Image (cartoon, rainbow, N blue to C red):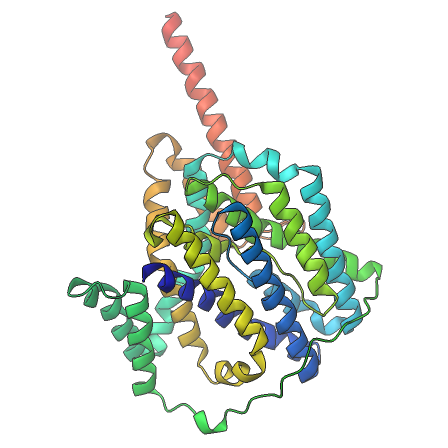
Length: 390
């Protein structure tokens, strides 16, 4: 039961917040309903299929659909480009990821990252989701109070469901009691197959879409997913995963999808020991991926329901599934005294969402943490050597 719950929470993380951002980006780009549905189909179906294949092939819990941070970035630039230009940028972004996987850059770098730094990275990236629950609870106090009761109190009396799922159920009850949602106004769109888009390539789209988007996907999603798997005692084939995500993103780009890749937070959630043993973690990932595929197939019926949910409620429900993983990551990051300072720096940089020279926060956080840890260890070894000589 717990692995199904985890898979459902992972799918909710991939579908709710990502869907809202996707709809906003499509509005800014002036897309029609048909183009919007094609975008949904491309990212959720292609991403769900990709992660299902990787899970079955490598017997590891890969979960996700598309890059939520990637769509957040695309939303800020979409208004300046036509749909074929966007598709060209998405297509080339996938090509860049294929090249990165083929050269083995990530594969050589990942084994050099110590576990405390990995956990500090995860905690820093999760902070914004967890912190966002606070203002959301202030705006929807009944939802926040009932969700907190579901997470902390109800599990003390029953273990029928996980604390996170109890919190989500109770939070939804609070929403129904606190607000009258306009259910009657919800109207679905007619089902349509995705539309093939002939990409247009331009220098502006390459530098403003393809390169930044590929860095965002690799650092915010792929690096997080792969380091989370390593943290949870898996040995993922790094280069093949990056290349596979690039290939799926190329396919998604032809139908207007910005990316189809292994998800960072979703994979971290499904691969967590809290999910259960190895088979249950795989079951959680498959559950998540199947739900993502279904979400893409039936997006025409679901978009209207998502649009009426208040933004604070979406933020609250997104943070709840990640709360346990956040606390576990923080505890693990500061467990070793020798790595506390590098872990704190990694945490701060990851949480800052720093974007410098087109490189996003997770990559800077990993780099700073690893360098500080190795410098500290070298200094400690040198100091110990001098003492031995004396």
